[in-house]
Length: 201
Image (spheres, rainbow, N blue to C red):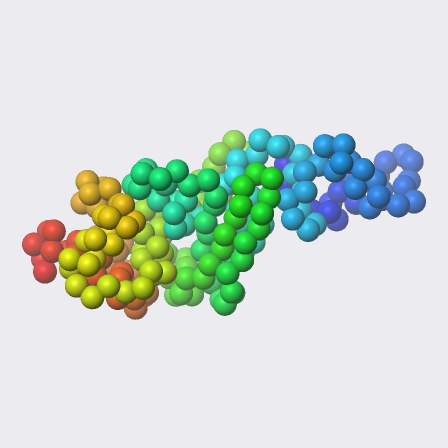
């Protein structure tokens, strides 16, 4: 369960014996292990809480994307220990170190933020994560642009290490829609590359 400090302190007020210093009581319960502090004014009782469940609660609006999402879908070989998320309008990257893992947040264009996001559930928790297509476009958006097809293939398959079979299963219509909204050379090249595989470009 995820709690704010205010929720916990309010709970103390319903106990039979009032506390003269409820924040001191909270501090003692954190040290005793009843609550685990995630960040300022945010606590959990379940030390085995899925790391994805905390992403939006820690900082938002946001959704899970970039390397963590690509790893989650198994389209890159690396295992992502830390959770990477997309935000909009923040104009500054944010990082939060927790006992569960580290969380990283970075902006994508406001126009594309709501496109290509899915809501998933794990146990009693819900979280938002980019589709494979959206996570790849977010990743490409943050990389300096390449100039030609050879450089793009090297970026896609050697640097990002995207699965070469999975690339043929992407939703080209979603990629095309995203390409119009990102206005980013790398995403435009992805759109053109996929069309070339279909013989449309």
